[in-house]
Each structure stands twice: as structure tokens, then as C-alpha cells.
Length: 499
Image (cartoon, rainbow, N blue to C red; front, side, top):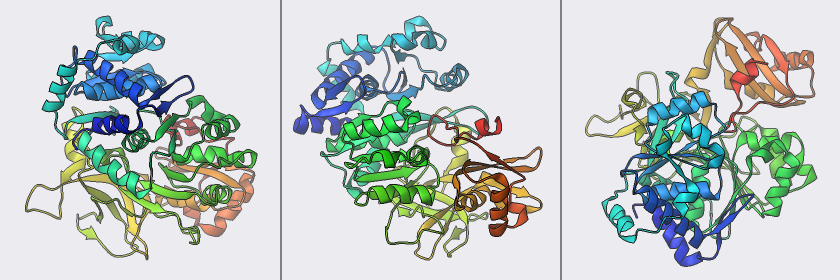
């Protein structure tokens, strides 16, 4: 197998009339999804050259998914331009991407016109009406190889310019094959999609569904500010599998949503993006005593995830939940500052990854690619590329990797080197604290601690004094009603500092 479309086509053979994807307004069977995708692919092949980007400016939904797969049928790769982003950000992305065409709908045509000339705008509704070019699609597939790009997701760049992480068919196939097998995802599952389509968590939702013949249930984004309605939607749609960001799960548990309604059909919850607070994990496990919980770790550059840890309900996680062990066919290891491998327990090193799941690099950003995708310093005998994550990890007594924070989250405060995650972990364990985020102001050399909870600042300071040395206690503690989130479901640190 060398093209993800083979999953779609096999699922059509097996489950043609089964619902493949559903959103708040529409649904498609597998047969309908393939037909729409092939029509869109035939149309796009009249415009775009193989292996070039197709920008998709649309809300997530059945049409957007059809356009993604249509881009693949055309031999191109898709890039979602999230219409919720500021126009300045979209302009930056397009300046890097230089997509010749933008696929959109009437709702976002004005935004599209600000990014490309009018004749470069294609409408999804028109593309779906195009006849299927059987010979053309066959010719494209014959010319395709598994290292062709499938999609690109743009992440923040240290230079201030967004970086487009380009991922191939081969990497997605390699990862999803083991992902679905490890966690027993099958045709009976209904996968509740939380993540935006320009965030790599959605890749697990989309392609796990296509591979196994499961149903993809797209959860409307507005519901993530309405815990009661969100739980109703999950229950009404009989979701079995939630591959969600930690913050999205915490949204429900922070407001005690599970006391209102328990999504009893859910049997798998896989979480990632941030460290899962134990009190929130325990709340979910108490309400879903038979469900499997998995901690996932990995940056976009290695195709979703590279390590996992299945939660053991009988284990003491007071020292934190490890990110675990490597997925099959991925080698995850630690390097110290001299590029020597770290093997001893308790010593921190940079988490590095090698294997088929590595991305192709950053789009039109050779300097950034060369900085992070490098020759394995442990191998000088042949080409052996690795990705340096910039994350720190260490081995625990069981040989599992524990996450120790970002290299760039290590600060120097009052003469001491401090990991912000360590301060956050200590705050999160205090009774009366629901959510925490620590931010260091380099200019003022001041450490801020933001928290959601019932405890007052004076009492919190006293409790932290019992746990941490004075140089690790935030200079300013600020109570907030909720943690602002980025579109990817992570805590928005800039928005916090603006409060």
C-alpha cells in the first residue's frame, strides 16, 4: 500500500452504505464520500499540477473532508486555511505556501479574495458537480509514490514566520496502521473529532476512520464553550472513541460536566498536547470505569505521535503520567548537550525520533528544516535522519520516558535554572486548584502563576511554600475564571499575559 486513498476505496468495498462522516448539518456514506472526492479530484486535476498545494479555506465538515481527499486524488496535498485565524496570519501562511488555488465556499469568498486573485478561487459546490475523469485519476495514481506529500500543517515558527510541516502518504500509513491496531479501533467505532482540521490530532481521527471503516463524528467547534451541549452531542451521536487535546477534556471536568451526563458509549480516550492534570484524569476514569485511557506524545513533525502510555488504573501516578514508550517502527531516544545518548535513569536529555513517520520537512524553509531534521549524531556510517523535538525527557525506573518540558521553557530565575512545568505540576497538586499555567517575563525577570480554582492567592502561596523553594514560587499569582485556549486547544499564554 502506498496511498491513503486505498483505505477509502477498501472501506467502500466493505461498507459502501455505512455513514463515513457526519457533521451538524450533513452526513456522507462511504460511497458518497468517495464519489464527492473523486469528482473534486477530477476537477482539481484540470487546474493544479501534481505535488503542489491546494489551500482549503473552510470550516471543518463533510465538504472539507471531501476536498482533502479530492486533493489527494488530484495528486496534490491539502493545507487547511482556518477561517478563524486573523487575516494577517492567513496572509503569512499563503506567503509561504504560494498556493495557486484556494478552494472555499461563499461564506469565505471575501477572505479568499484577499489572499489570491479572483480567478484562482474555486468553489467546493462547483467542484462536486464535475464529472469523474476515470482515465485521468488512473494516470495520476500510476505516477504517484508513497513519499508524495499528503498534507501540510502550519505551526508557529521561531523566526515569526509560520512553518509548514509537510507529511507524506507513507508516514501517515506507517503511523495509522500501528495506531489503530494498538488501540483496537475498528469498524464499530464512532470517532468524535475535537481537533481543528489544521491540527495534526485530526489526522488520527480522519485516517483511523478511513482505514477501519469507522464513522467520523465531527463535533461542532462552538460546543467547546458549552460543556452541557457538548456532552449531549457526544451522547446523542454514540461516540466510542475520543482522541482529544488535554484542555478539551479538562473543559468538561473543570465544570463538572460528567456529573450532568456520562458518555457511556465511550470506551477509549486518548489525550495529548499538554500534561494531563491527575485530578482531571481521575475524574474521567471514575466516571468511565471500563474505558481505556492513553497518554500520547509527539510533535507534528513526526506525524502525530511517537510515544504512548496506556493508563494502569492500579498504578500510582503522583509523580506524573509518563509519555511512555515508542510506537512500533519509531526509535525514540535522548541526547545530551554533547550529542551523546542518555541511557541512565533520571538524567534529562532532548527527545529525538527516527523512523518512517518523520515528516518531509518544512515547506520552502530549508534553513529551518536543516536545523531540526538532522543526521543522527550517533551514526556516521550512512544517511540516518532524525528529528530533534526540542523537548526534554528522562527515563523512569520502569524504563519509560517522562516528559520534562521544553528546552525553551527552562528559565533562569533568581540565579536558578527552573523548568516551568515543574512549578505548574506543584501548583496543580494543591487542593482547590483546577488548572494552572506559569509564564516567565524575561524583561521584568518576573514569574507569573495563573490558576483556575477556589483557593485564594495568599493560601496558595503558603501551600506552594511548603512544596517549593522560594525561587520557584511565582512572584505574582493571578486567579482567572478560565484558561484562554488557542485554536488547537492549548493554553493561550499570550492572552493570559494580556489580562
